[in-house]
Length: 315
Image 1 (cartoon, rainbow, N blue to C red):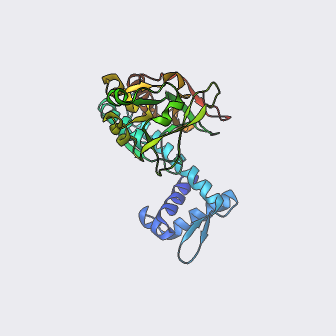
Image 2: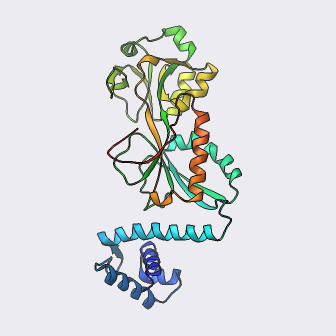
Image 3: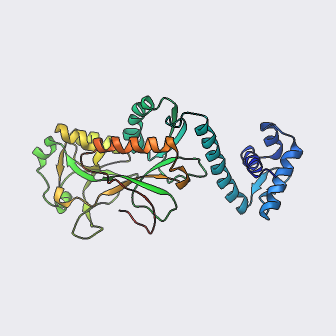
């Protein structure tokens, strides 16, 4: 049995939804497809598919094999492409995921220059506010905000994102500047949330995690972009990621508040599978993003470290 060919056929069967559909797509005979699936099940000593008259379903072992086989086949294709081209020139398709707001405002604007530098590469940018399954969804790189759980993924720390509390000079001239987090109960705060209610912001208090302080929410939105716009117009005090308000602060449209009470920064990482680390296109994008991030956020400095995520470490 050609194990790689059989795994490729198995992946096609799962994605096509039936043996006959996979046979047409390959193309191959239905008998050949059935024999390869049976050979795989005999080789691994376990059923991979549950067959009914209407559909196919994966067993638990079948799902494990599907995820791993899809990744292996993708890596083989990358190797074939690498051997057929100038090894100094990254090429192919790169799939990247990012949280929606960060991806739209920061990552997407960087892609024009990246594609100009790498004419043999194309990029799929997936904007989703969830942790993607990098194997199942064939993601080469994932941008993630926050502390990381245990994982066999490789993490490259890009930056420490600070949450900046700020307001327009016009608002502060009218209402005065808060000196402590307690003062926010007497101010108009602009709150990022899907549902109005009681609101709290976390500030430093000497402990590792900080302390939550109740604030007075005057305007609630589920769009940080709109909230920052309202703050520029003098509607109140907003808290937003450093990269989102950097230009407004530099231009004087917003003024930074409660600096001595700012909470600990939140780490921003690039995640990749260990098997992707040597890929020229992955390394090209990692190097480019690290280079660009050094220049876009004056409030954070990314350390020069690539590491494996373990033991809930976040440094």
